Image (cartoon, rainbow, N blue to C red; front, side, top):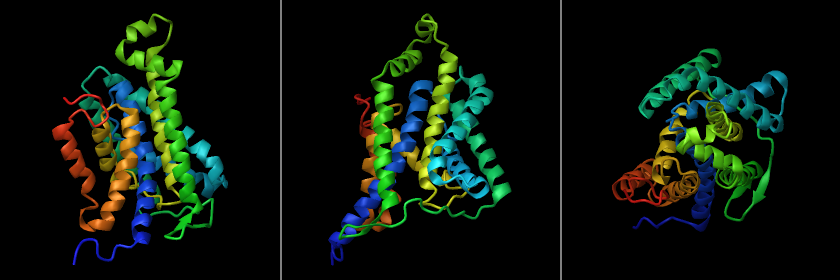
Length: 294
């Protein structure tokens, strides 16, 4: 008996698609994390809590105000971005001149406070959020829900659009320049501290957007972000800290690898990403897409 016994095309392609869906969330969350670290040198451990807040705001909008998913898709990320803006002003700006380790500790503390507040008010039990796109299509090897297909397509366009914004527009050039030489950018009359605040709010808004996308797939719960964050940090480390395209590509690739591992070696599915991270740290310590080996 071999590891390939019992593996059918339906199982293989089904897990491959599930890997692409999971990779869509990995890519979007890792991209936001990479933007914040690459442009601000802030290790945002609160990213998972902000992702959770996006899902909770969407749930609150629906359950209390009757705002449907399509409205929450725009409103919830904006609310989370504003929360991030306040958070940056109050707790990150005062320590901006310190080692990034301090931002990690502060944002980790913020995570505990945010999750504790949500748990205190709404409990730990997952809250359901109905799918805005019921039904699906039979692909022959699996039934593909329309909503999950929408998540994959939306994630790809969001990731590409964000990458183009940062890497190929004048605004992105100002952001990168402000990271390398803030004095030069300020000489053009640009308020660099305000730009950094808006950058953090944008990255946090991406986390909130991911949370809204996740709400109809996963139950909305206070711990939904914390269980995902270790994996997202691994994605960012493998792709290269601060590399936006590296985070995007690595997110999708690792989602696929994780899905295929569930087919060939289910026991190792929860460890394969961290095994790849270990190899990356040994052979490409600056990340697979950093362009440097050491």
